[in-house]
Length: 184
Image (cartoon, rainbow, N blue to C red; front, side, top):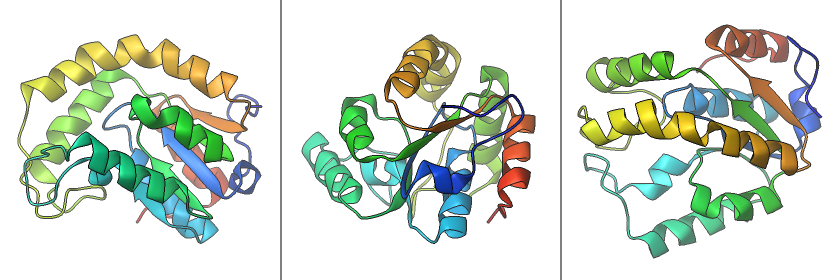
């Protein structure tokens, strides 16, 4: 299903409902907007559905997030980024393709610090949000996400959906170039 090393399937082959999975701070939000713009479909950021605006990333009640998630996946076409494993199988039943961003922890941790401290108006930022460095997020990036990697790999491959795997930031840059994407 995945293309050869260094090559990616064309974005059109992934269909009109694309999931972008991967670790926090790996570039999923920016990629979702770039792919959505190229395909003329909306980008959906699950973090923005999961968290309340005008907070420091305070989660919504679970039932409210699930309602927003289900409304979003019911759409005719979308590029949806984020993991939220509790709802992942529902999303995959509607998805037509996957981009799996599989970048390494040190770079993701570095990007977390950079974006939290210096990128207030970044793509995927919470409306009216007040970012701050959180030990829970650092723990998640350093310890939790690496342990979940093989599980996500299994889910992506077992889905039976066409997918593109991005294994590094250099690989992500190649994907942008091969797909003719513009970073927003």
